[in-house]
Image (cartoon, rainbow, N blue to C red):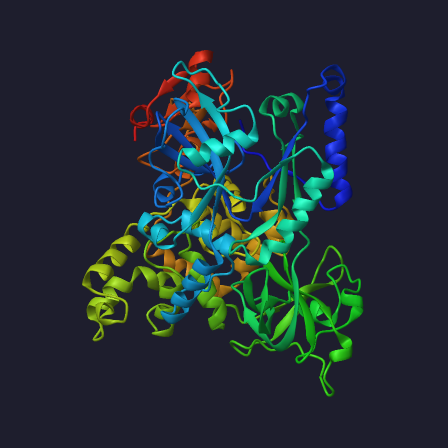
Length: 635
């Protein structure tokens, strides 16, 4: 059963209509059977990360994120570090195989502890408990996840099979399922209610809303479900959501505080982003000291569409403002209490000069709309230290070159110390360190072992995949998907470089740069602008002296036994990540599907393969192991 999102309710009327729809659907049952009970459950909607846990014979064997609802990211080892998740189920009566679903979250107390610890030792600035919990679950080292003290509430089941593989619900109702989870050793939310009345659901919503600030963890609404599992199946699904459940969302929590200052931050593409500094205030259990201000028009009281926001009132330092956590995540200023504006408060003058390098900051003309872009950008590019540092951080980030041990903190430190200024410098670190008087092993936070690991990790990325390499360059508008399309089109970094430079130097660059499916004029113009800058080209050439991006090759059928085949990966892969497996198969000319069907040619099954393996066997699809896959493709 897929892990789907829920439809939302934003008013009492929406809840009443939800109950009315249920009664209408089951009206025949209500009229036919005087004992028929149409009951609902109400429970807090935890603001965390959804996870699915698979138990076989009572033992936890695999866990994953929700992903696209059908297939998620394997995070088994990290989930094992959470105390609320039993490694072995308690008691008895559990099915031979069961999938337990719930929410991983971080308490306010743990979030504040982590923020304080990070600030003390110069670490990263954590934004909110939900994002921090999600990032903690995706750590490569389970020890880091364990140090974050995450929690888990169990609230639903996905599959439950007996010893013969027959699917059988673990109980008759949602209420009983949660009770069983508690008996088996899971933490369950104590604020769950069962009732037959829409009025009771709404009253429980109000009660939870009142308790929200004192719960010690984030919630963003209340979830209502049909209690009987058989009725859930009968009512079914629509599009990407079940008909039998709905999430009654809370309005964003607000608080009043004082705007004490406006700082300007410079991003890797040169965008000057204003950030509000606020007198600390608690909003939804989280202390808010900063808020996004987006751009200079936003400060003036103008939206991106040119229409007034906040009734056209501008923001000034000293103003008393209303702050809310939009979606209970990103703090925003939504109103100004004009009657409390101090005398002499001056309109904010947005800088036309980059605060990091002194270069001119401009608002570019949007060729499509004929209007000025809402974002003001620094024109300094590679002479701007803020852009350089942010670009270096991007270059080594997880989805770019992914250099283990070289994170944001280390990049900023190395830049400040003069060790790196361009991507190429990263790959000459070892050689330069050998000649340096002050060795990296003697720097704060490093030692001989950690330095060797870092240098080895850098050397391990000297032959990156072409799509990752293009993404790592940080070309504006070129994300991961676009980078993959460019890599597939050009095949080699040399051809990409030559074509882009030729287009950049041509009077009509768009006639030289090829049209590529999925890539529009904005991206093509951005690529040409990047290569029109001689400093960018020189930085790239210096980098190519140190690294050799691998050609992006889709092998034709004469050379690849899997070209033209449709393949599916399932279970835990031990020699490669799911992303790497997909990229390998596509480079070999295979089509990678997310589910098994009659069109599937090969299923590559790792440990813990479940429903996909069963379906493949039913359809007669060829099933091979990960090792057999490598043997077949000759790698």
